[in-house]
Length: 290
Ligand SMILES: C[S@@+](CC[C@H](N)C(=O)[O-])C[C@H]1O[C@@H](n2cnc3c(N)ncnc32)[C@H](O)[C@@H]1O
Image (cartoon, rainbow, N blue to C red):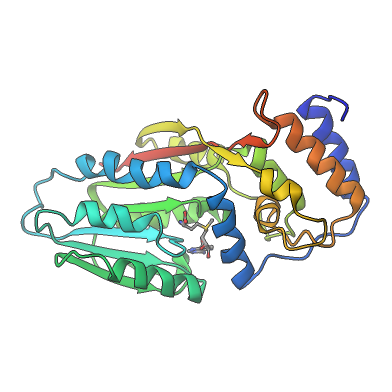
């Protein structure tokens, strides 16, 4: 395979995409199924499952209200609760009362969240599942933490969504965004996913919005790796859930030309000396309201 720069291979991919029909949407069950396969090919989820309880517990551990009020958490776009369960378990230790609400519009995923958090052995944890979209949700009481783990991409209006979340927080409360930066993988979703009706919001957009609100923000980039070895050996046209989630579309009808250019791009952005593994970073921002 000839060596190009990622910039050149992306340009060639764009040209190939422009000359071919749009791919079918990833909908419902296949979104959740391909997401699970994608996360299984990456070490990012395990890092998040460890990072969130470790970093957020101390930040939520002090405040004049504690002792009289439960700790209230809202997870937005929680999927099947894989990332939320360890956080909820860590927060609800030592008898601390925690009210944990998961908002998830995909009904089967919402049921998975409810089952997973319901199975935790924590008497002081109360779990509420909202099978709906975040923008329609009103919190019944001020909350300590609203988090978006890989879900801000899909919100219709990023600024409105962030303002909605900030308005739910009590003074001193935290808004957490765990969102991928625009390069190198998000650019594929932007390019190949059928139109979601708005720009795909990435970490850079979140940073801009939070800065505009003059919030105290702490951010860091968590490095991770996505192993595409399995996807590359899957036959073209067969079920390729990792590739489907990577580009945010069903890829079975992808033309040979687009697929070839896509593989070229992935090879160019792969880790040096490891052509089957691509960087899979995530930017985490923690904003505290005053
Ligand atoms: C990539 S998944 C992340 C799931 C989970 N946070 C995780 O990291 O495993 C994004 C989730 O956001 C949900 N979502 C999409 N639009 C949403 C909205 N308007 N409000 C709340 N959740 C939404 C999707 O249904 C999906 O489960």
